[in-house]
Image (cartoon, each protein chain N blue to C red):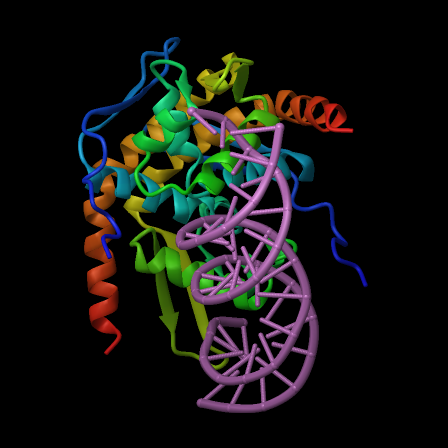
Length: 141
Length: 141
DNA sequence: CTGCATCCTCATGGATACTG
DNA sequence: CAGTATCCATGAGGATGCAG
């Protein structure tokens, strides 16, 4: 069984005519990289956590309070994931009770730029998207 | 049962010090919007499909060939999702055999800019991320 | 306070077969 | 050619209880 017979398309390109911003993907590893980061940023909580850490470091339960709806389990898992990817640092103060501070690393901060741009697009265009959805769903009956 | 008791944090902010790009989230709906778009773009195939449609429109099986690994089912579902959100247009030519052309809408094209930036970040920094992962995983034994 | 372990549910996504 | 229908495996994510 050949799960990945071809090395994928070479020179695939994604570009925006207005801004001239271009994404060139030259090989399969780069495709994987893009998908990889997208998966990290696209999960349910990562961006929320990064947003909460943008201005300053936070403790565990501080983050928990500032991110309504997140469960303890998912906060832990999300932080571990971000830490593993080098986007967030974890500093333990061995006191009683223990204190753990989370903060963005330089890499994590550098991710804020493209993520903020995508977020701004989302806020600017969510109306159009929802309108399109309403039209589409209305045509389905 | 109160599934969402609080309207979430007001004035949450995500910014990048180097570029000055800032994302300001003023209310819960905006948080939802960002998450919403992130979910669309963060799924397994959407960006691949958008990439394939960047330069020109494509037919169904053309897309299928150009996106290695995607199943027929997922290509259909991804295209339907993008169409529903107003990002992709679907043009049916009722011939025998039938012909269906997919293309990016203006909205879809405008999404290319922020997505391309995120993609470029991914390609530029995947090495650091993978290095961080190796270190993290190595420390776990 | 900061977690980990367990159990459970449900959505995502893959494989396969069938259809206009 | 361009789908739909069905079944199934996997993992994300929530609830709860326990621990250092």
